[in-house]
Amino acid sequence: MADVESMFHQVRVPPEDADLLRFLWWPAGDLSQDLVDFRMMLHLFGATSSPSCANFALRKCAEDNKGQFSQEAVDKVLHCFYVDDCLVSVASDEKAVSLYHELVVICAKGGFQLTKWISNRRDVLAAIPEGHRAKDMKMLNMDQDLLPVERVLGVEWCIQSDTFKFKIVVKDRPLTRRGILSTVGSIYDPLGIVSPVVLSAKKILRDLCRRALGCDDVIPQTVAQEWTSWLDTLCHLEKCNIMRVDPEDQLPADDPEVKKAATVNAVQASEEADAVIRMIHHFSSWVHLRKAVAWILRFKTWLSSLCQKRRQQNRALAQSDLDVEQQRCSLEKDMETFKRKMASSCLSVEELEKSELEIIKFSQRKRFPEEFSMLEKGKSVKGHSHIHTLCPLMEDGVLRVGGRLSRSSMPAEAKHPIILAKDLHISTLLLRHVHQKVGHGGRNHMLSKLHERYWISGASTAIRSVLSKCVICRRLNAQPMS
Image (cartoon, rainbow, N blue to C red; front, side, top):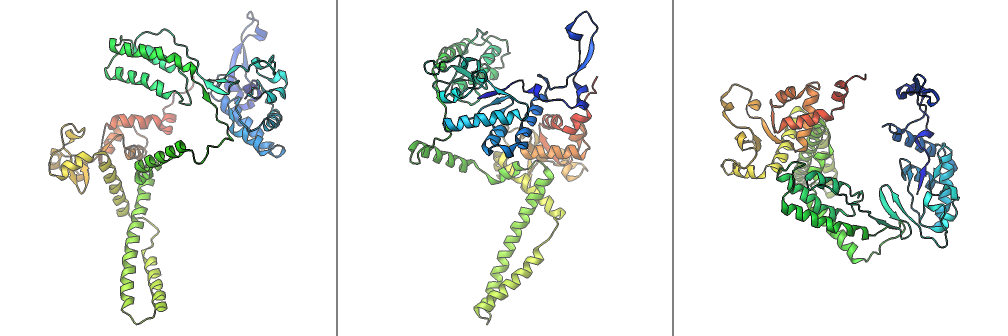
């Protein structure tokens, strides 16, 4: 592991962009003089753009000099840096030393100096000059001293045992939702190693939220006892050691636990997988989704017609006087003619409308199975259903809004709009589509256009989410810089 020394300050700011990094300061730090306008010519710490600009420069350096170094060294620069931290794992000491020399030189080509080197192998540390090692590594006796504990991207790494550890410091917090959340949030676990332990505390937070307690309200005594009991066991996490896996190690093929886990995971994946749902979630555009489904339906119809035509041709040829070879040639000729007639380059409006209805039918039946069951039996939707107030009715297999508007002179689709839930993916696609059709209009304009054909429960909340994520709207509504 290594660190790029003052990484941001090694990358210059283009002169045309330097005016965006102006600041006021006293000449030579003399507070008695008037403030002077300066410009940062290097990327500074704290700017949002600095990490991406510095990483681009580092990656560009590796790509420009890849002909002079091994492909492995170039790949490590491209894929093993997290901003200014370099984390690399290799199989042998010899490879580590060789990689160290290459990484130092290739980074130096771009003006980046790798320092604060750390390794769990003493032979590798011995090959690194003492001045380039991390602070706790400089004065070590490689034959006698134990290797220290270092932080790797926020995680405690015991270099001597090559294990990950947890350092738990529980501060005195009030017995409130805010205090519990602060304690839970202080456990830094990016790899999710201690998730089973933290889950108990998160369940306590969930229960407190369900009780509608305020952030600073004192929690009930029973919950306080449960929380205190969990805190008492938290100190045991410091005894937890997670071995780091060697990238070259491979588990044996006959390991019974691995095979069992793999089998269980495969079963779960196959049980939960739904190709249609995955296809719907693949699209981020309502127009593209409609077209894709329309083509699939056309292909389905085409295959059905093709099979039917082939059976008819086989029956006709079986009654003819032609031999087997002549029958085969005649069948292929007739089928090619039929395929050319079936082929078409454009989708019709009817096909697009049919595909839209099929998407809606599928999504509705997945989301409202109980409501469909009741309506198919000729009964009303039960009162606990969240669409009960819409008096839903079923028309051609589609759930629509009922009510007294059926007597009005409005268009049929406006009188009985299609019911959708806001948590459906197609609802989000529809709202984006409507937003574009109304020229990136506001919430009321979108609602008016939407209700001409659809009724999405909780549409106002969903529309606010769509508007907040619209890049064009955010750019148009942005406040000017002062």
